[in-house]
Image (cartoon, rainbow over the protein chains, first blue to last red):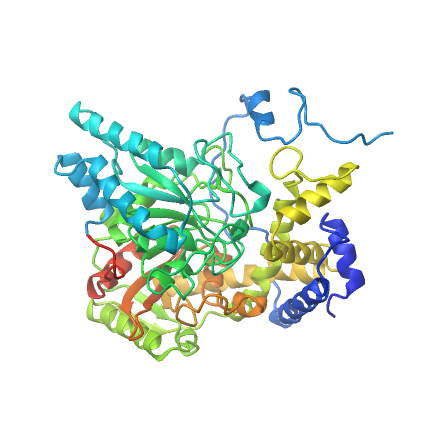
Length: 98
Length: 482
């Protein structure tokens, strides 16, 4: 099973990558590329005989943990410095709640 | 040409001023980087100020750090407060981080002179550095060939001697492969050896910062500076850091090395295969014991890696919405603005991986793809553990081929992914691995071999690497002067 155009459009919407202005043929190529990758990935199914339990990390090491004490975070100024739209106190976005 | 250790010692001893050492590197970059395309940002004045500070410290009799005066470049995925961090993406055009990465702080504290930020595949996703949104980086050995990726800029900078060393990041081979393509030494530490705080995340369970250097000893010194626990990174191990530089001169007689013969047989280029065979003989001559082995499950690495890495990337890159930082989007609603920022800000390879990652994590497909990939990963790691119960190291190719021509893989993502065939298993297992240069092929392109050791045993990795380095001295590319 590959990725058809309808599935791609759903995925793009989920990832906030949907656009009405994709160049001609771009979505078709993306479907084809992703389908070929998934064809290859399906080999994973045959890779499992005595299947070990999945583990998100390959390495478990003694961790560097700090004391559970509040630490200073970014200053408001530093946090806002890179923001495209700000009123000096907050990030500014279009109204969400009418 | 002096390696970074000899440079640091010369600066400490006063036979070379840090400012003079820096100017020699700056002059080379001034002359040649327009054509090579390795830097995204050059920190020339800040570097001069740092070099002056080193010289002043020496004149004042203050103790100098282990990297004092050494020019070092940084992959532009490492956060710096005094230079932009773009990840080679329009999404982060002009972005300046509010903090330095831990590795950057440690380099500064060691006296290193940071010369600039280097080009990469966008958000570290790629194997050729061709996915950068800003410029093309060429291989210093042949401008028609790729330098590898994603850390191609860092590899090229070191190969061209624009800096004495550089940092890259390796998620699926992005230090080792460009090191092999450019004829420099590149090392991926054990996952957890080096703090990832301040490395812009691609795949958090795989990303690891590693050094490029012109010598094994230089990489060892760099690793000693970078490694060690960091309370900012809970995945960074709280383990003592060995003296890697001392370890790099240890003898290797008696070490048992598993030869991944089935990998070597897949190498397409006869000169690359011959170079690898010659490296095996060098290790035998040094007293190591070599036996053929097979790494069970490694053949599924591409599938497992691209599911896991894409899944993690789709999550990590969801933070880029153009609201708190980064490229702003246009639109009447919040959703339109976020969508516009991401559509305009990300390049095609990044979008491809985000969509793939979204798919494999979605309801109905999670177990079939992501769950299975994690199981396969666990199996690959267990197979590595079984090998290292009998062997001290593994050896095999870094890549199936010599550096490919620029543009040769751009229309076929799967072909590009397949070039990571031999680097992915070590990434999935979290073990340390290095690319060691082996001289040049008859066509003038670099040859290399990959060494891997058990977790936390970078010391043996460096010792074996140094043994090969002595047998296969590597020149600098033509046009680079001492």
